[in-house]
Length: 191
Image (cartoon, rainbow, N blue to C red; front, side, top):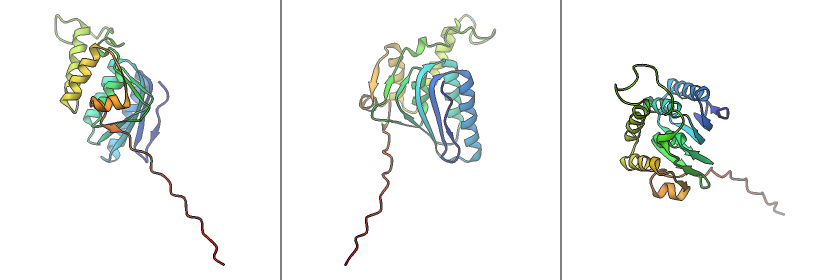
């Protein structure tokens, strides 16, 4: 994962590259630090090529505990576990040239890990226990339509353009355009 961007004053954090435990800890710390400052909105930029599901669930859990409103902006490619993190935000915007790739969420790295003894329900394979946990997370998404879509997409991976993602309610809208800077009008000399 690329070193995350953090703008304390502007309340901006990022999830860039592949999700791994070391950078997820940094992102979780940044989100929690912003939360302790005040409950103003937080902007999360996401350009993620997937990664470990368990680490993604850590971010999802932190986002769900925040009182701050988290707005996610998808840029570049958001894939696999990154889609789950993106979909968890209360507001989801996408840049015009971004792509969302719903790779098989249920078969992501992390589902193959052997959990500690005593983890999960007796008699269930660790993979099934983690899948049940992921399905529970998906059911908690802000929109039932979005939860159904993520669940279906996990079984049949697809690639979506920004317009398709908005039409299918995976993203709310295109990211707002940056405000244009007004240049001062040239002064005319009157003779």
